[in-house]
Length: 254
Picture 1 (cartoon, rainbow, N blue to C red):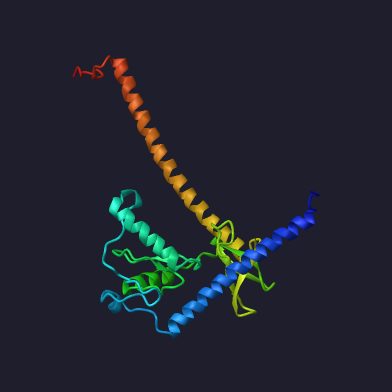
Picture 2: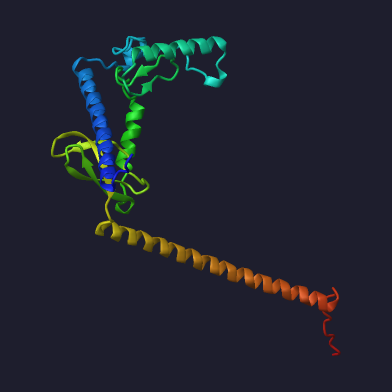
């Protein structure tokens, strides 16, 4: 079989990335459409309904069955293992092609599908905690990278993420031109812009100043320690010279 030319290899790689991006885009649009259906059909449960033992409006199982959470798999006894395997088989039978995550409430064993089952509402404490995180989070420009994303619609957009990420972290994003979610075919990190360079320089200068202050503090401490060592060495030398006896004092003859 003849070897592929470099151009053919690149084209095949691009085709694979486009196919994967289109699949991610379809999954995301499918999920968003399902969520709109949940809202339109009033399928979300309230905390009161869940606490009253209401069944999930997606799969019909209780949201909170009060059977207690499953123990770790390695700690299941024979009876629990049989029940767990039956529940696993039932879940796979109910959701063979959902391609989504699972969720369950603490203290409950019923597993629900992320595509079929509307999730429970957040508690007031959870909402307050999330609000606090977003209100107090002010990212430093020097910690952000700008990425250029090529989408399945062939539009190119820019987005930012924290510099700790070595690759773009999502498979889909919103296209401002198409006004809908699109899959990401490729992502390229752009060189740092002027604003980031200025911020980085400022942070480095602040760090350098702090390091110099710490160096001066340690230098002074080292100087005092050196003085103490010199005094102790002199006292030890005096003892060695006098044989351990106090130095003789002069006696007045007057």
